[in-house]
Length: 353
Image 1 (spheres, rainbow, N blue to C red):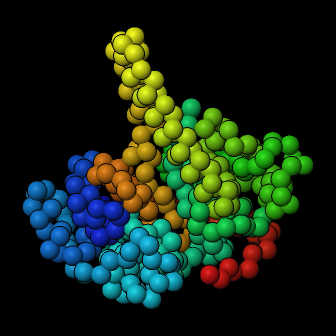
Image 2 (image 1 turned 90 degrees about the horizontal axis):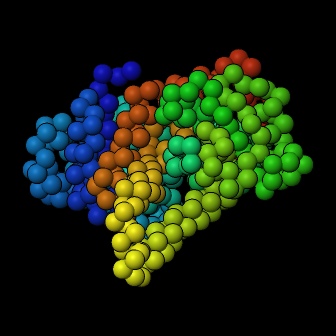
């Protein structure tokens, strides 16, 4: 474990840039004193925020650039315009050069993935990286991937996701053999696309010591917490994520409206406010913020763009944990162990975008 965790922050990413990134870093530093920060962005915007947080200022170094990737840039545009000059690129570059252990950005997701993949490259045995995130469930939390990094995927891709997701779950949940399920339209072995059924057969046949494959999991099984890791390709994973986020917002709005309808409902809220507060805490998107780009030769964490400082701090915390507990080494060990998960599967052809 490193004595210091060095975190590069894209201070110009997201809806509010340094106004959220700097106080978020201060919150995270309060939880992890063994952190050092590289703050990448416009010095004129960073320094006034830093003056409000003396402890963070003492633990930080600024890398100046006034070039930012727009939230509306296409990945190809971001690579052309922001390569070697933007705050997003320079944060990733710090990881590439070994000056930082992890990069965190709330910027454009497609641009961040394109830059990370282009600059850091993928690990041996990994064709395409994935976005993984923590999903609150009835039983606690699960790791779900891929949430939109790449669309589609053959059996090789799904098996590699299972291996990487299990490594992340073992780090976050302190489990030697996390349970893994494949997201499917039914629990029966005959259901689903051919690549999903083939991946299931491979995972059962390999019986990997690093993970416990439990079979197919339907959509409602994610929220039930039926597995520590839920694996799917990026198209269905992103739809599942956006559906869950929208449903949570809808439920919160409906509940708020109902509680304001009459004096009896308002009185009922007073008696049950502790329960409602617990519900809000469990549904708080801030506490589930931070998607990890898995499969790269470096650790990159994506924060929601419209998050507040507390939410951004959680994304930094995720990056801290990934470094502190040596996620990359765990993934490499699982991928490259003799007779490992991918040795009997032919890799998918490289996708071009």
